[in-house]
Image (tube, rainbow, N blue to C red; front, side, top):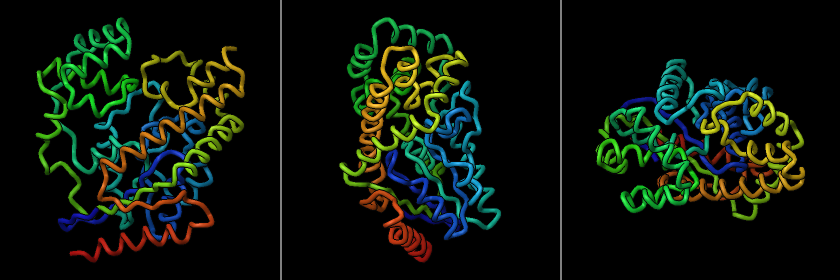
Length: 321
């Protein structure tokens, strides 16, 4: 993936959770003189270091990291808000003569950077409240069915349990009479990033990825994730906030309430992590086909080869003018 209008390059490192993309981004930053910029919707929250598998303080000290832990869990980070912050960080990194390396598995954020965001009119608070009340009244499955009936094109892109995105699609349809897909197609092309874009995506074999997801769930539980979930729940935040939907919050909360044993909670987290990784892998295959896929987990055994592949791609992209 490469376009150029005389602007400096950026490098995107994508992939599903537990694929090793954060480690790859750090190694590339050290090798290429770059700054790592977060493109993960949960790693922006200060309270979610362990549950979101954010880079460790030691890793953050080895190379500059931006947009990690910059928002409180009481805030909402939309794609638009992240895009504004990311564009500012990219510009600053480039002004310093360094390479911006955007890393994450949140497809909506990366899509916003690559293609811009539709300029949807503001949604009235009253309409949002009605939509939310209807969702609570009839349940997620029935609410999603209503959306499918009225907007099958966009509903097909959504998982029924993704309450935030399903509500958003419904609200836009109610407020404007047009599908969010229509608004996105009408987005002016000039709002996408127009410099060099090189993208690599880690696509490990399914068995290796699922094993890494299982390992991650165990590590999170044993390294303070339960306590982090307890501290988050103790804040008594609105359960609809994005941070409250982070992997591990629901599972460990059930354990803390006595509804699940610890092994049961960890197993729930393993399953949830695998499902999430599968959805991310599907998104990258379908929505970023121009990216170069690397069919491996990023590990010390393969580090040199994978890092060299990414560096070669960046160099080839820069010479393609």
